[in-house]
Image (cartoon, rainbow, N blue to C red; front, side, top):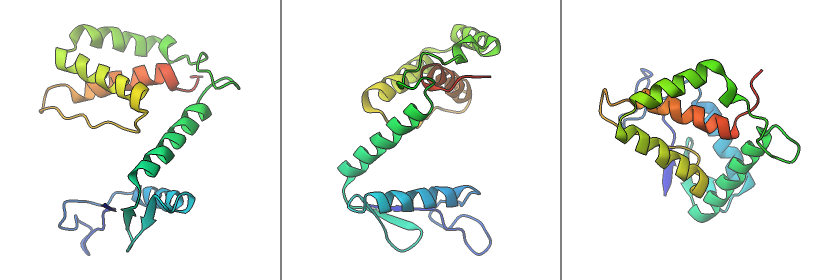
Length: 157
């Protein structure tokens, strides 16, 4: 498997493959290089800015370690517990959740539930939310993000 980073054309537009370069892409590239140095048997840089996945199973294990490290780093207690998260106590977010929950359509509720289940079962690092225009991707994403922050986020000042 090969994974390619976007490479802009001379005019700074998409490279003809459909990928456009964005301002923060170099951070992603540096992170992928770091991953390839930590576990070279899983990911190897090929001709920049491309990478070859040598062992997807090892890459998933590394992804799990990274996610666990992020979750431990954002926990509020030395034992790694998340009981100190105060996102659920923020008045404006609580109002948004209660208002949005009343107005959510069934497909939005199911999407949020699926994403939360995937977080728990698969420890996945991200989600793709595909809905037609006007079907509530923004509200669904915000409500999912709020619920995720209630479980895993840092304390709010």
